[in-house]
Each structure stands twice: as C-alpha cells, then as structure tokens.
Length: 188
Image (cartoon, rainbow, N blue to C red; front, side, top):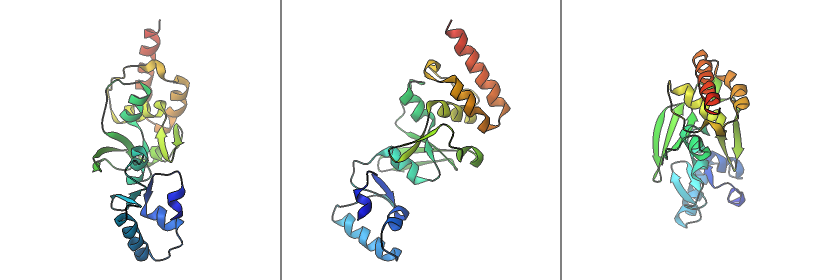
C-alpha cells in the first residue's frame, strides 16, 4: 500500500481509499483486514488505522472529527502559558464530545463554523493542525468566561489582537483587554 510509505502515521478509510487504485470499498476493507491480521497495519478504531502502535496521538486527534485542530489546554500547557498538566488531548471541532480511543482520552470542544474554519493562528505541523498559543488562548476565552492563565509573558500580544476579530465577540474583546492590562501592570 503506497500510503504506508508516507510520513503520516494515522489514516482514515477515506484516505486509504483515495490513495489506492481500488474502486470497490468492500474489496479494500477485505484487503485492510488482511493487513491488520498480518500486523502490517494497526486498527485504532473503526475507520482509523496506523502503521503501528507508535502513531502520533495528535495526528489521531484531528482524524476522529474533521474539520478540527488541537487547541485549548493541550497547546497552552505545551507553551507554558498554564502549568496544569492534562492527560487528555483537547481539540476544537464542530461538536462537544469526549472520546476514549486506544487508551487516550480526547476532549472535543465545539466552536462555531465561522471560527472553526478560519485558519488564522492555526498551523499545519507534521500531518495535523494545531493552534498557536495565541489562538489557543482565544479559543479558551471564547468558551470560558473566567480562566486563570499562569504565564502570559510568553504570548505575542500583537498576534492575539490580530486574531481576535474572527470571534466577533464583544465580551472577548473586553476580557482580552483586561488580561492585557493585567499583564502590562505585572511587567512593571
């Protein structure tokens, strides 16, 4: 299977179908069963496959529901903006749901389509989409009225103010200005 020679680690059935020369989905499903039975392919969950068990969980996160991107506490903790560690992977998508998959918990949080489909502050890294720390901060504020951030000095405030208009939310504008004023006064 040519798709297995790519640098991607997680594939949906649709990915495999589109990259194969197989025109009949039923035949492809049988072929996939053969590969799984002979340990040449790992079935993560229905319709999602990996080359082996050492796949990238962030890549899996954005394959469960699409469109989606990794955001919220996952990005904020990696960037050092919050100090709390979370085992779950937080993902922005079109529905709110918690999914347990292959021993990993994925927390999907709903953003409106007008926000979710804007790629400002979202980067493509190693076969998955992930928010910048600035976009993750804004996503978090969008869904939470009050949230404690431990270290706002790591953020690019010009970037935050550039991304802010995609939310079209007066409460957020007010809240971001409060966070910014508190940040500036703490820097003195």
